[in-house]
Image 1 (spheres, rainbow, N blue to C red):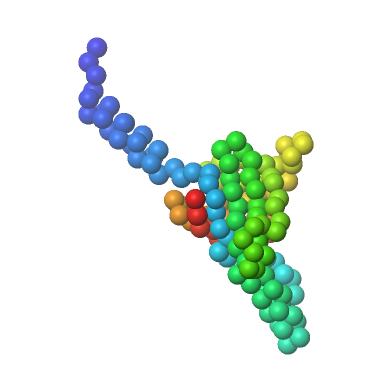
Image 2: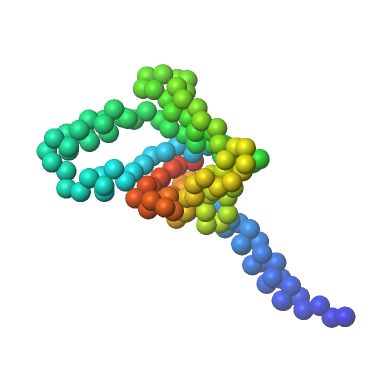
Length: 144
């Protein structure tokens, strides 16, 4: 039985390239940009509404928010208060990830409760949006 070496080498090459291009979601990510649907639902805001939106966004300030995805399908979302080193709020969750979507799961039933479509996943950045509310977007950078 004669083996086609050229075909075998090409197959191995394409397999190794496809494995290298697949990125992992596991690790700790910091939210660098988050948008919600609030601005879209208000329409053209009045001057008072603009001031209120500005003051609300300034309250969130630059307090870091991180999301950790573990290899076992669990994760944790952390918020820190400004000027404090420890997290002021932690929320644990379960997830399932495919090449195109991140599914958040109910802890007991493991049914899908929310779906985020992944626009971009590289070794350093992650961009995704909520499937049901496209105006709800997250941009993250890998920190670990």
